[in-house]
Image (cartoon, rainbow, N blue to C red; front, side, top):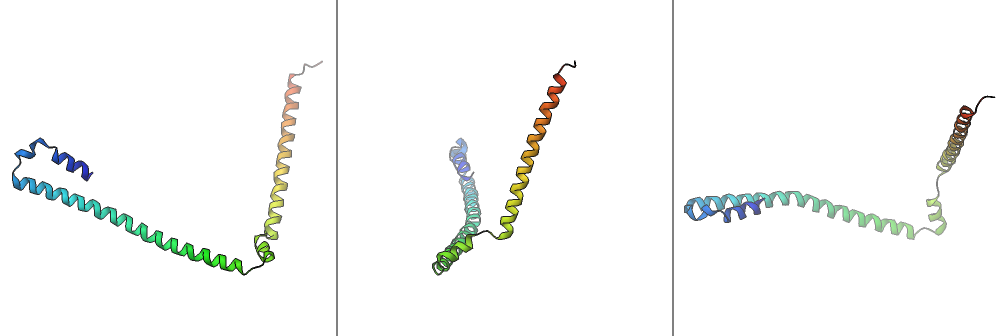
Length: 125
C-alpha cells in the first residue's frame, strides 16, 4: 500500500505545482506510513520467529532424548513398547465383529428388499 502511495505521489502531475512545504509534508507523511508498515511487519514476524526457534530447540532436545532412550533398550524392550495393550486389542476385535454383523445385516436387508420387489411384480395365479 505504501509503495502504491509513493508511486502515486511521484506520478502526480500536480507535484511540480506544489509548494516546497507541501512536498515536504507529503514526503513526511509517506515516510511515516512506511515506518508504520515496517513496525507492523516486525511486530508480526518477531514473535513468530521466537516461537519457531523455541519450538525447534525443544524438538531437537526431545528427539535426542528419545534416541538416547532407545539406544539403551534392547530389541525386545522396543518391541514391547510397540505392542498394543490388551484393552485396545479386545476393543479392535469387538469393533471388527460389529462391522461384520452390520455388513451381514445389510446384505440380509438387501436380499429381503429384492424378494419383496419380486413378489410385487409376480402376477397372482
